[in-house]
Amino acid sequence: MGGKASVAGLVMWPAVMFGIYHSVILPLVLVEMSEKGHSFFGAIDMTSLVMVSLGITLANIVRPRSSGERALAASGASINFFFGTFVEAAYPFMFADKRVFASALAAATVGGAVVGITGSEATAYLPAFVAPFVSTNALGLTLAMVAAAGTAFILTLLSNISASRKLTGGRA
Image 1 (cartoon, rainbow, N blue to C red):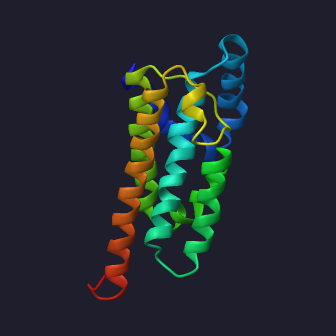
Image 2: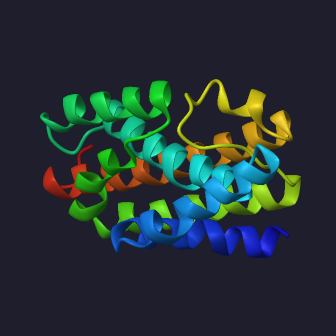
């Protein structure tokens, strides 16, 4: 299941950006939830979109590429963490640097893989600190969330450090 789930994680960002999420994936979440009370795609949403966006925005709080990005990242991170939505907060950072975009895809794949390996199902649109407790596997979903956010955070931070060094002629 880890392989299929990693692919599900990978395709989430393109699905959101090209309008497929709301027309295909969200209805799948709703159907699964109406039948079982939890959803595979809900867990994929939480890990591969919300937590990846959180990781990207947190990295831009710690090490923004420019001074104005910290405030933008802070508002997005707080909404993602406390409300489990607003993945679009990562867009400015993803579209400004293809490495951050690639980081989002990689982190989403990692999160999806952990969801699949642990067999976690959950719901989307809940605060990040609540989601594991309404999932089928609290530890598994927590691991997937931390893996996705951590991967996005580290890769985005490295990208921002690299970009800063280029701008300052090698000095970070």
